Amino acid sequence: MAWQVTFARDCEYQLPAYNREDVNKLFGLSFGLFAVHKNSARFGWRWNPGNERIELLAYCYIDGKRNWNERLAFPVVAQIRIGETVECRLGIHANGFYYFTVRDTDGKSLGMHLTDKLPDLPRYGLTHSLYFGGALPAPHDMHVTMSKL
Image (cartoon, rainbow, N blue to C red; front, side):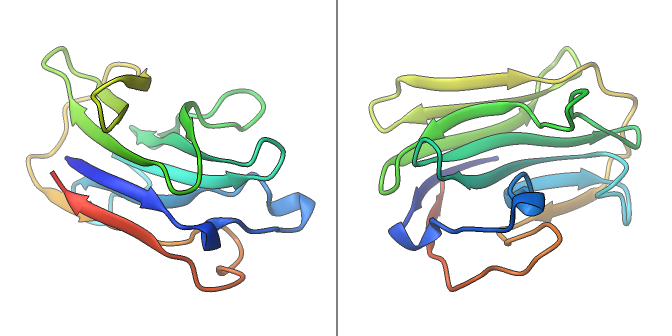
């Protein structure tokens, strides 16, 4: 799956401290029925007001376990500026792991993440699209331009 993505200025937001690490979803896929919390891979995103960047995250469930670290933080694939257009690519490598890549419009790599090895996955599933997720709804309208590649 590959999308060209641009976040508008209105994607900047402020949340209470206890929700600042919440992850919004950009796009992804899950394997099996109702398996988004069992076997899935999605690009996550959130606004980081500290460095004024959008963080693009690898947000996965592998055999029912989230891919976060001991601090409950998901891997940051890349950090981009508001208005910057990037290519986000998500796939399954032949060796059996999810890969996430982010490139600029000139093809320069901005970041990459590889997951742990995947279990055997069902051969059916769903694709998932953009939404503001976490414990709170979006604090205001936000605009993300997405074009399938």
